[in-house]
Image (cartoon, rainbow, N blue to C red; front, side, top):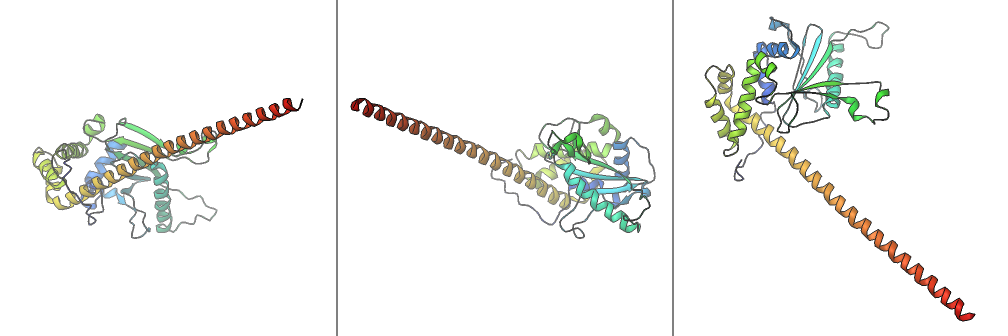
Length: 291
């Protein structure tokens, strides 16, 4: 992207494009098809979907991307444009809130003597960051624990991270055409961003879309929202990378300072040894002079 490009975060569009496409009531057919592709299932009735996405209006700053129930399965989907190995910890918090909502809606008593039957959680992260990752990676909460006690942990959270960059996860993309189109669209935008701003890149990518792409009409109809969401996402990703680089530089500076401090300590130790040796020599010379 040109250094002269000045892109500002648009706070009006707080959703992520991935969720805007695949997690909306009006697109529940796409949500169901994505669910089928991810879980190798064959549900046909999209009315089975019960969205239960956490909104930050209700949960003081906590908001997940997309969550919904089909039968006894509770799917929690997150999109990440930067790699985050702490997703199991984040999703643990989301699942806790979702279960609390489920218990409240169904007037269940978690303090009673009767066993509560809960929907089975299926946690998936759709990743399309620039860092190279395998098609599928399993992230585990226990990876955050001390290795010496990890096997003794009484809790585990397992998250499937699926790489949805263009050209990756071919089997999944072949099963679900809108996801393949989304991957193509993001890849096309990234290519244009090398020489254009975000808004121009989005327009160029939509115009370059083949006519048989099912997402083309939707993206064109919601152009302003798409521009705003991608503008925000890319700025957030850039800010995260900036913080990471600043952190790395701070770490390097701390390392250099520690090195300098250690060098000063070594110099001081040598000086003290030299002073002690000189003092001892003088003591011996004094003793010889007496004799």
